[in-house]
Length: 127
Image (tube, rainbow, N blue to C red):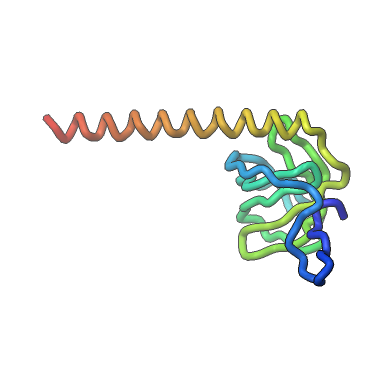
């Protein structure tokens, strides 16, 4: 399991085999029960953490779609509406770089929309 924490000499498990990139971008989970919107919180070559309203179970399988990423996964842990996914095959570093680019673009677009909304609100209040 490539993304599982590696045991340290003293028995504590703190490090992961693959470093994770923090992101916040929309995606989709395809499960046996249907398709569900999700938010990708972090991603590595071997796994991801997502937030989703779908009822996910440890050991469940599905497909994570977050272009350019489309990968089969197994759910390794679930905590309320957050789940840790292990990819069936490692994704390429190029895919991770593209996700980073999409994350930055998505964040910048949303920040600009928020600034425009606040500006419009302030201008209406000033009249």
